[in-house]
Length: 94
Image (cartoon, rainbow, N blue to C red):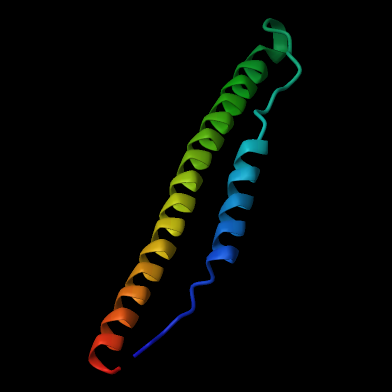
């Protein structure tokens, strides 16, 4: 049987660090380029790249928040199972 140790303070600290990193992520900006002339195509491509990167960053942040929530929920569930099993074993073996 494989066992593992769930150290809730560490899990909460790491989840908090992930949430802080997500909150600190700032959208990218760039200096505007001329919309006409030889740089027009580059300007449009740069606008699209920055917008796509910002959207992916937003989606990644949302997913990291869900992972942090699920990790904390799993830790609470493991603790609950552990406490329940311990209580049942005490009933069987005084």
